Length: 105
Image 1 (cartoon, rainbow, N blue to C red):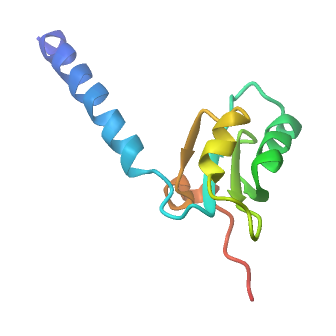
Image 2 (spheres, rainbow, N blue to C red):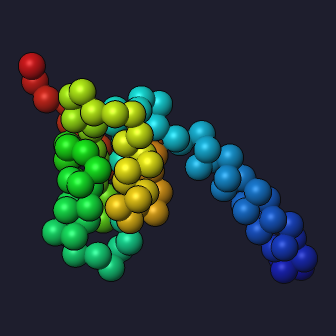
């Protein structure tokens, strides 16, 4: 009986995924959380993120890197992260515990 609703549940899940991804887009063009391929080493993920912007922190997985656009940089941090191998670029607030704590200034 449960298998009868499984296709409908899968369709619902797959139709909601794009909405969630679009809603998680970076709110500020100056900060983003980038998800790199999980089989990449921490050094490779950090290097790729560093080529796109300034590394602000690393998530609980080494494939998640929080980045910030360097001062005076051209807009397009998310595009630069994708060009350097990021699979997904979202707002750091949606990265949950992956986002580093704010620095005390």
